[in-house]
Length: 338
Image 1 (cartoon, rainbow, N blue to C red):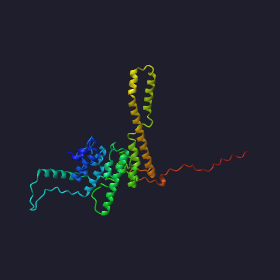
Image 2: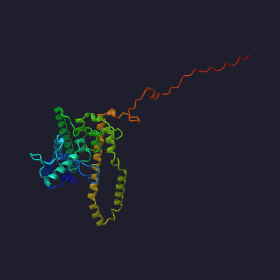
Image 3: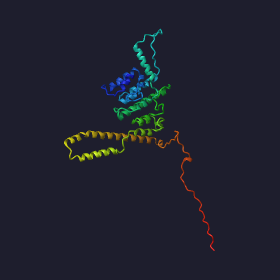
Image 4: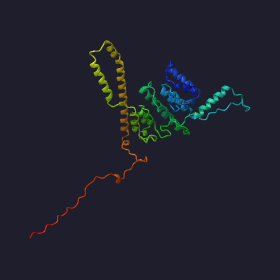
C-alpha cells in the first residue's frame, strides 16, 4: 500500500488547515524519514500507470510543499545505506525485538529498496500538468525555486569533490531528454528559465521523439489540442441561432423571453471559455516563435534516414540546365545554274 505521505499528496489540496497547516503536516511526515521524498507511490492513481514521486504529486494536486520535498530529497542523497538491523546489547546477544520495531524496520527497508535516485527532480516536477491553484506566476516561481536549489546543491557537491551516486540535480535524464523537452511537452510556460540555467538545451535533441529539437517538441505538443483557427463552424451556428431568434422575436411569448434571459449567463461563460483558449493559443505560438528566434540554425538542420546529419556533396546539388551551343550547320550549296 501507499505510505501516509502518498495518501495525503494524492488528494486535492482542499483542506481547512491553511497554507501553514498544510506545510506543517507534510513537514512532519518528511521528518520521520527524509528518504520518503524519493519513494514513489505503490501504484498509479487516477488512471495513471506510472508511479509518481511526492514532488510530482504535490505539484499536480496543488500542495504548496515542493520546497520541503526537494530539501528532504537532497538531504537524503548521502543516506543511501540504511541500517535496518535489529539492536544488540553490549554482550553481542540480540535483544528482544518489539513488534513496533519490526514494523518500523520493515517500512524503512521498503523505503530504502524503492528509492528513485536516477530521475532528476526538475524532470519530475515538469513531467505533467501543474494545478490551477499555482497559475502561471506560481508555476514560474516554482520552477525558479527548483532550479536554484538544484544548481546550488550541484555546485556544493562539485566543490567538495565527493563522488555522486544519483542524478537528482541533472538537467538531462538517463534517456537523453533535457528538462526543456519535458517542460514543453507538458506545456509549462517556463522555457526561458530553463534556458537561462542551461543554455545548451536549446540545441539538444530528444532521442525518444525522432530526434526533435525543442521548438519541434513544442509545435507537436501545442497543436495536439489546439482549437480551430477561425472557428467557422461555431460562428455559423451562432449566426443561424441569431437569425432564428430574430425571426421569432415578433411572436415570442413572455415565457420565451424569460428563458432567453436565463440562457445569457451560459453564452457569457462560453465566450469567456473561447477567450481563454485563444489567449492560451497565442501564448503557445509566442513560445514557439521565441524558441525559433533563440536557435534559428536548428530550423535548417536536415536529417538523413539513418538518423545521421545529411551532408550534401557537390555531386548531389542539382545543376541548372544550360543547353549546349551547337555549331550552325551549313546548308548544302545549290548547284550552279548554267
